[in-house]
Image (cartoon, one colour):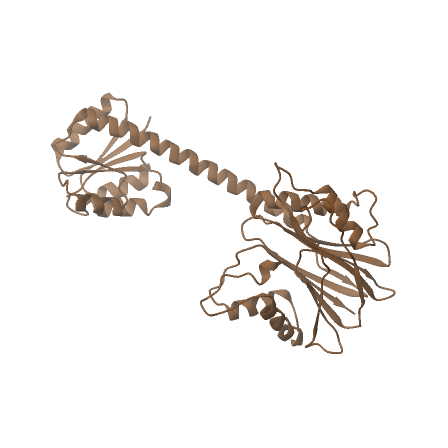
Length: 377
């Protein structure tokens, strides 16, 4: 049975409304002023409130405004009862949060019709709120699962890898991984699926699981160009799937200290060597994002890695931040920031993010953010 709270300082109006609505099967609670009405509303959480506008100890506008500010009462339908019928008065009521109005003298058929409509809207709001909470719970569980899929920081006699992932929502389209192909070769890659949320997260996880299980057929995982070609065949866009992704994929040979890499529409990886920590090398190969065109050829490139060098692989979300006017931000400025970060004696990625926050105190990431820091020993 729906609970309806009537707040009115006039006993006759209280009695009239209570009798009419009781006959319709509603559970009626009465309050004689605004203060009492607020106390009872918090206690019983009614589905609908009918409140007089002009009352002692808080008028209807004050009651309405306070009711609407209480999260537990956010779906309660609020009807203002008033003899004021000017447009300005109705605007004041709507601004305070009123959902509907009843004018005095009250017409009983109109009263019951507005109550029925208000209760329908209340139930719809409750259903939407419950579905939203259920969806948020499921997304949180999915985000927790994603965090278990991503690898932990890696420490090895030949190199160390640290990683950071911040989704723009509870789920994002960025993923990364690193694993040993054998006792000599280490794979590390980072990909960025177009879009955000669950629709971007699912194909991102599918790529990670496919690469981790080495499930691509006729692919040499030591050759990055063949891996990207295999992914491009497996994840082509279609009428039902409009997702594509960028990726940077590298294979490090720890014996020869050589890095072979290939990229598909992804930002360049940034390499700093021990001989000149202020001079960067941008590692990138030609290639459009995976999934756009079926017959794209990808190429690999390679370079030697000196001792005490550092490589940064990241998604474009790291430098695509909400900008302040006249405060340009982009890849070049990020690289300048990495140069300064590279000079710090104790580097960690949280400190790097703090540097970005220092440059942009009110910044917000508009996209998912992922970054790998590989320190070669």
